[in-house]
Length: 366
Image (cartoon, rainbow, N blue to C red; front, side, top):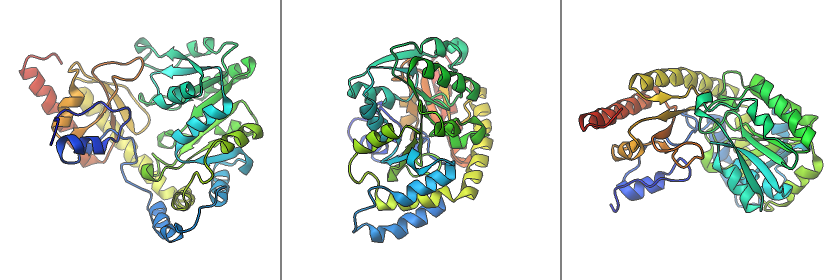
């Protein structure tokens, strides 16, 4: 079975790493995907599209681009699709070739990674614990001349917290004033109580300084199919983003699944209902165990425990969570857990309770 310690991975969903260490698959709370699984409509469309996989996919993803444009109310010329949001983040950084960028800390590490690969200097805006890790007007002060692009995640990952549309609008105006672009990652927007009211994607049609990132990964449960898109009204930028990618960035299976997913409104509503109820229940139960819990609005929660090796202790009991000690601005004891179905969440609560009880018995502080 090899080394029985679970490595601290760069991202969640490290099922193969777990299998390699423990010889079995875990109950996975580390990846923030839809607890209901894949959209049934997307699954059926993907299966049907396999017969077409002998042919090259449409390099321009015409049907998918049309479906996204209709769904989000934007011109097709504003949409670029890719092999997941991570692919588009890398392509966007390469296409913009910025000299200096601003990112939050903590936030999704792919922004900084892609920017550094593009030869960009990265400046971090630190979110403060005394401000509950929520962006405030302090962020505007860091958008100064010389900043070429600002990346934000709404809701943020790993906190699940939103800065709110009013601050996003002020941030966009500040970016315009200094000549910077604002990239807003809305990959978790669909889990919010009011997705449309929280989004700024409607502004992308008229404001070339704004780029929106979105994906089918989380809400539609399509992580393994790799499908994402960006929206921007700057035709020159969208052309460059498309040009720096491979010739066939999205498979025919992913294209078909994406078109079908966008029409599966009932699945989305059912998901939002389940996640909303279970998130509140899970948050309350974890707080009762003595953990510090951030009131995330998406399908995951950020926790802090005084048992600093909580990640490893849970892994030994068959439960995989996302260790967050490698996020800038966090540290030991921080973990992120996905909101899953009722019975699965009960297992998480029980297992964390057992770990904390054992630590207390051994004289550890809780």
